[in-house]
Length: 586
Image (tube, rainbow, N blue to C red):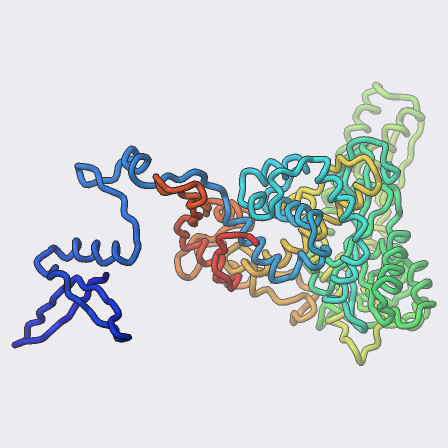
């Protein structure tokens, strides 16, 4: 049965007729029988009959015309459970687009668990135990079928992931690294809890955690800063030694011989440059260290007259055969260093003057003790190289070494980028921009350690588990990198900033684009929606819930899932991901 509506026009009037009809077949022909005329009923009642005949179920209203909770529970339907869904759904959509599950490995229970760990690390970073709790309280566990997983099974899946490190990184490198291209590499460290792991060692802590053992790891990234591989080292590994391992990885495992390595001045030292010279097809972009710059300045190879018209100048020098040296002077940095040096000189002399007063008052007479106190002062401010101290019994005097101060001031704001790439393939400004692109890897480290993934501290006790944990963070970082890019227009991210190698003046400090300035000022998008940080956007997405509903009086299997209504921001997220919000993750 159905409701048929007909309309006829007569003298500028429209007359509607609503008939209740049924259709049937007789002698092979479809016929229609009118059962009644509903035109006298109110329009809302007719619509209710029409929708009811189409199979739609309705909840009876209370006597006051409103639906009460009791009526819903007794006569309508109930929401059996409501689970956070939006953040995991957005991450799952991006993971599907990237083919992340296929990169991880063949379909199996372990892969589902690893994918669940990756989603947990992206949406709700924490321990492996915390991940299992989050699975149970979100749609991830239900959709991946891993709600029942215990920690022993999770750790077994982590071990399975660690054994697949090689194929995973080869797959990612095959996507984003090419022969003749560039590879960015930088090293960082995180502190450890426990000392059983062979990788644990005391070394330079980049987190400022003195007295704690640590482990080091380096990110291999493509020119845009997208992480594609990670190498893990003992906590006392020097930067140059770590760089050699990366060279071996890129050339032997990834099969890329014609490649340019980009690393900072502490990573690609002169010894590493000499080693790269022996490798066919290997090129480099790095920078000179302070003593090397000072030596060039003393030989008059670097003069301030080079920067009369521009902030950079290209030179060559016999100490660096086959290389181009791009000398850069950042006026802002020069001013900062000059001001800092004057402040340190003034603080040193104030402390020395106070010491001289103590000596003159007779409270300190022994020349050895006076010398020790004076040494502490100049060491505190790192100004010993700029002062001549004269200490005698009951007397102290000092004078500035103006020649050294002037020599240091001559190199304020100056840094030198070195490369083996020929001038016909890359200009001097682009060389500087390529070196500055290492900031992308440093941003990855901040994302991994403190902002997005909370890699640190590390609690695993065995070397395979530590390596697998950091590999898991690589996969989560890879997914986060793409999510941040896709959602940049509704976050405070500057979407219009020019790449370092494409700026008119690559030496000058980067400035925010007008669009980024506008977002920071108004806290809104052009269509008046709120601007989020990436983390607050994930939190807002998590408020999009999937609700399991059940109609009273029907079997349990008749329950159905329904998403909550999307907010404008949530709708925009999935528009940017070019997908409808999936009701299920798989």
